[in-house]
Amino acid sequence: MKRLLATIFLVCVFLLAGCGLFSDPDERVVFPPEPDSREYQYVDLAQHIASEKPCYLISRDSVSVAPLNAPGTRANKIRSHCFSTVAQRTARPELCEHVVSVSTLLYAGHANDRARCVQEASRERAPAGVGMIDHDSMFELAGFSQDKVVELMHSYRLPANGRYCLIFSPDFFEAIERMPRFSNADDLESMKQLQWKPHPFLALQGFPCTGKFTDTERPATESPPVIAQ
Figure 1 (tube, rainbow, N blue to C red):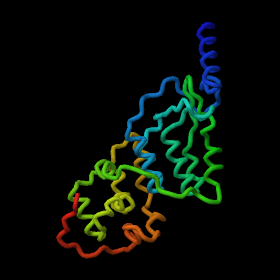
Figure 2 (cartoon, helix red, strand yellow):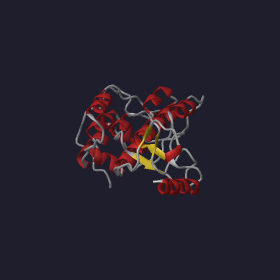
Figure 3 (tube, one colour):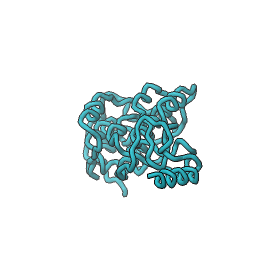
Figure 4 (tube, one colour):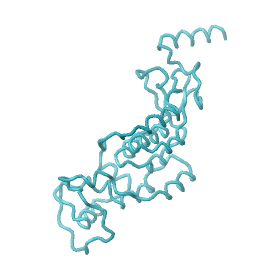
């Protein structure tokens, strides 16, 4: 037993004091399960649409590790990272209540805690930009068929190069609840309480999305035009 502890200590020293065994996180797991790749996509989606709704799809047990990160930040709950990202992007420190720090046997994540989230989210100016995602993959996960996408583009009078704009639509926001979920029933109920709000990106001039989705009534539907693929 002493030899095992000595070995673990030497490994931790080699990892530049990043060992989770000697950290003080909110939670500790020895060997976390492998997360589903879609959970990482949900983090990117939440950042993209500036909403915490996709975060509720992520399992509370999913942990990611990054051995090259700074000591204390090498382990992170994916769900917590999602909420923290949205909190920072929207300057809403109240979302940090969902942040829980975690450490594994070899990787410490105690610095990815609620206090750090609140500090980052309390900045006077939130980070700009919407990030990059695979919009078609998101439409597929939301159950949008090609015909549905064409119908919505016609309904909102989006040009052929405005397909990506549907990510910011209330229709897609509602469909997030139907995406593959790795969380529990309580998280689903929390998702359903959230309401769509216009993304600031929709107010920027010079984009196909400018001014879209903000009207209470849609144009009368006609036969949708053929959208070039």
